[in-house]
Length: 128
Picture 1: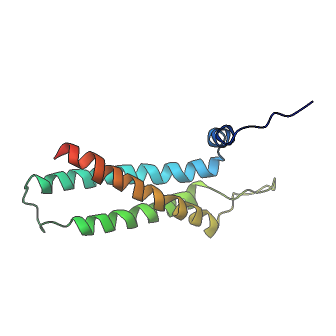
Picture 2: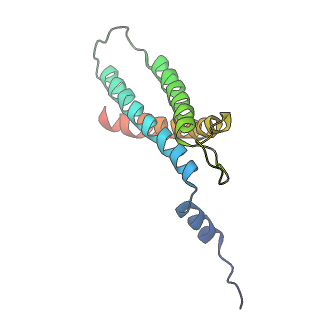
């Protein structure tokens, strides 16, 4: 029996469809936080662009920095809490380590950037 070689696209599509649950949890938790905070930033940005007088003035740079820090920290903490290490069949409570938090941190950085680009470069010009 000969095995059919799959194309690069078929292999990547299969990997995407069958992603490991810890990776899906890490990405989903970071994505939820990033979208929620991105929408808050969008409302603030549109209000400033339309001339609203808000206390403190125009603090968009601080808001972006705070957004990135909160998304990255929340991604690391939520992944630490939601993604236990494999136990290898041993009984007992699930184990956690700094590696779970590192997975969340590395998943949160590009997600924070991509959501911010979509909010700032795609949605904000449409709404202003």
